[in-house]
Image 1 (spheres, rainbow, N blue to C red):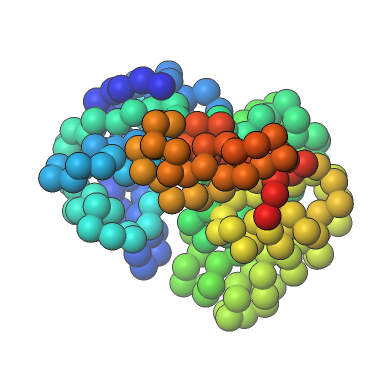
Image 2: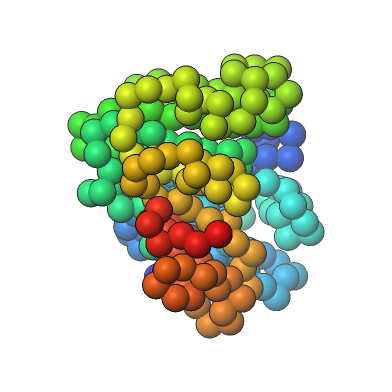
Amino acid sequence: MRQETFTVISNRTLAPGTLEMVLEGDVSGISRPGQFVNLRLDGFFLRRPISVCDWTEGRLRLVYKVLGQGTAAMADYPAGKQLDLLVGLGNGFDLEKCPEHTLLVGGGVGTPPLLGLARRLAEQGKHPAAVLGFNTAGERILTEDFQSLGLRVTVCTADGSAGIPGLVTDGMAAVGDYNYVCACGPEAMLRAVWTLCGFGGQFSFEERMGCGFGACMGCSRKTVHGMKRICREGPVLEKEEIVW
Ligand code: FES
């Protein structure tokens, strides 16, 4: 974990209530896709954990949903504003465990961390595919970014307004050639994906966090190996260790 100062390059709306913030700064503390950063926001005591969507040399891309006062304030941050970030938090996805045909399954704002994963799997010469689920066509985000990395993308919408009508599990049924899953999204979605897949995988949880760096135990979750802190030993858990 490193504490760094980043500068906002852009902060724009991708879909109603969902924004993309691009920042400039030292990203060398980030080692794996699926990690998160913890932002200090003016006037708020607690930092805000935001998952890393993607990063390249000197650039950090965050995609976040406006859920409360903190993220609402963040949505107004202009280009040029400086932010204090803790970077490289959490364990992230283990790329070496992902085989050639890994299916990335994302739900809503759980989709962004899978983009950084997709980029690095593609750089390894692997051929991941993606199933991305949203409530409506208007809530779709990042689908073209996945496609530009060469992934076959299957979109599902709960209201049937785009792609396959239904949930990501309906989309998974339409994609045949995979033998491993990396999933990120709301718990009900993760559980449905976990139940459906008869092989290994990694699942990224969105537990509510307090401190965000392992001190308060507020994000603890039962696993077959005992309690794990989602912010520290997670947010990514192996399929075999998950207890519902
Ligand atoms: Fe405090 Fe995880 S949020 S230990």
